[in-house]
Image (cartoon, rainbow, N blue to C red; front, side, top):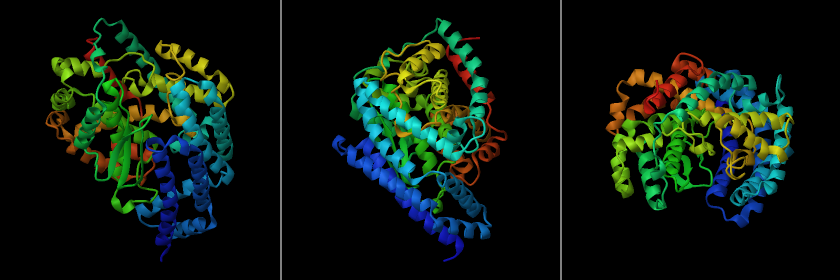
Length: 495
């Protein structure tokens, strides 16, 4: 066995344990009986420790060094680069910390589900305190130059630091605040009340599967299930799973499924020969989010998209037959400050992310304590969105991320918004009349372009290199602001 094959063999072994972790986590959120929570937490903790210990073992280090010495192709160099980054990070974490995080994450998830259902933040707070303590410990292990947030942000977006998030938010805060103000003062508000009803779950499930299948999500290599908070996960190019949730608001399942399918198609788009290697799949959370937001918002909330699908939606839900397409299209694009991030419109969505980012920074730097989080959360929602959560369930407990220790993750959502518009601009320039393709239900050219330019690249480049190659420039707010201003000033008849 040569040096490259030896490294790949080692990585396949490491991937197998990581896949077992992924399958058990997916099962916990989709199928596991509540009584299994304690055992599942133990299983996940042990497997996470084993995965960590195998990754940082001397055998992995030797295999990587040998492969680095002979690496010539771009593919092998990328495998070595990504593995080296993972190894450098993981060797800084004690095995005990890795196991503790995985075990606590499983326990905290179950407590989060229960506490959210009962609007009982006090019962969840001790778990959240431990999670932020672990995040602080992780940051100290990794090291950082300017702010504790830098170390955690980089775990999800290679090379990113807090200052990058500050620059991003400073570039969009004022324009979005002004646009929200203009929309609120407009007398041209769409009625979206008809989107809330007792929609049969079976019909929602069938229609959402039809949608994601039509845009290119491959059910031969994936499936859709339900979860308290929608997500996408996978452990092989040929096993990528998405989830959604069915509520009284029809938007929730429709756009939740499109969002997660965007993630899923990105993962399914990696070359099969890279399967189970660290260069397969999305290169970063920001680029990943650009694809979920592109398919959910730029494609899924466009009028041409619904010119094709609205008759089918009306057939599935006859209550909509009295509602013209224009009324429906305006309703699903209604911009209004609201409480729930995952159901927020394109204009206000980034405000939800700013709240979370600023609160994470405050909690990590001990400017506020976990016990004070509900009041701090509510105050920031008043400041940024002018709304007050009526409960902690719809406030600081609405997201699943912190229960799993995903702290430093949220800015990648706003990065995804900016990048989706930046990528779409180039896609349209290359493909031509994309609106007509969507009217005809022909999404293959869009998916093929994204697969060629982004999905098939996996982690062969760094995130910043990939974006510059695809769009000709680094990430910036300009294309997103042009997109959002043009769309919403048009929808609301604003100057």
